[in-house]
Image (cartoon, rainbow, N blue to C red; front, side):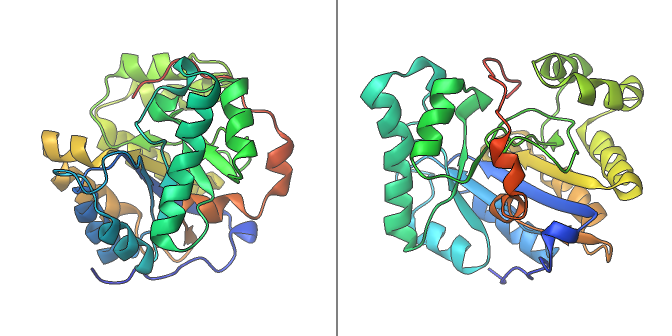
Length: 270
């Protein structure tokens, strides 16, 4: 794997930021990483630890390789449990143990977390905070605002063939009405996720903000979305006016986000 070019001079002063994130433990994430590296793009890989080294799952050596090449490794629970359905010690174990395992593998702090299926509530956020994470990513889409709740980081588009109705349902969740209004013109002329991703990136170029692509490498493999992924990577990469960073780097320059309370999310699109 070719080492990723570090294009993170100053997130705090950047007008346009691109970040990507990739969920679950499939070894097909290595192919995503190769594609990102070839375009000079950054990425965070959120990994559940319960199946590491089994079958087609990532191995500990894969995680060390990703980290050595500039990619961030974030936590995604032990068993990919839906955390709003877990209570007490089991909830704390899902959140804390995955962090400990990843840190032992990598020999460095793991500071970001991703809620499985994007589902969280006040209790889940409290446990994630207490575990020492600096922030957590949700699955809310069509967002591009530079300010957001640190423990409910939204995304812009998913590498997945959602229908228009799926996007609307995603935006009808609490806290997303502003994005629904802003994105209405794009949804009216919606064709597919690739077209939508380009249109939203163009809007961020014009007005500033964060363009955040996320996906599941196993879904990309299953649906053969590799050509579309290659196209969107080429479209957003190597722009002189853009800063490329991991999710964790995105969190660092705005401590005021930590004071914002994330809105409970019980439903998710993916």
